Length: 161
Image (cartoon, rainbow, N blue to C red; front, side, top):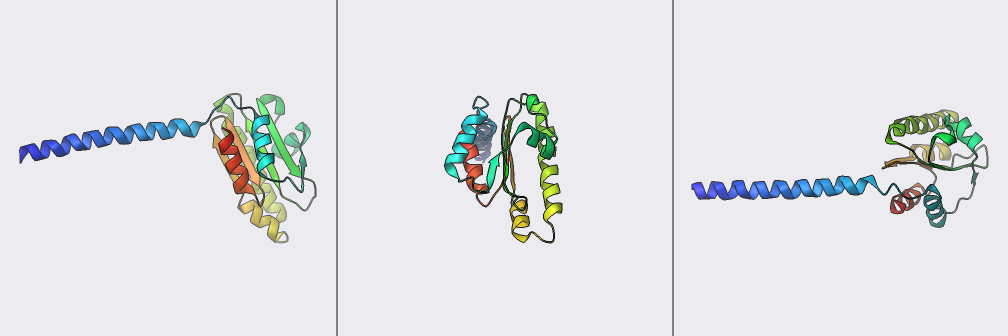
């Protein structure tokens, strides 16, 4: 009987070690590769989806819509609606250090909330897109995708890093 208990305890120990290793591997792979440029991510996204209804945003647009200064970040890609009745938007930011992530996430959430309020009540299709917005953080990268192709944008983003 005692040997049976020892065997079970040893088996549980080995199982815990294996689970710990799997968990560590998951955490490391989730962080992503922080050496990829935003330009590379942007190219992969533009290959994956058509950016109809969007135009390349400027540093002034980043400041206007997100209250963020482009010079504070390592890289930025912004696509904004080319029509006032559209909500399609893609933002990829690579922060210089991880302490900036929270600031960027708050700015992105604020933008999404503002768009929800702007289109609430009369922009049914736009509101659906806003509610389905994807906000993703991987390593030192933050993504916002508001589009009917948001899932494909997210996949291209994840594959890039």
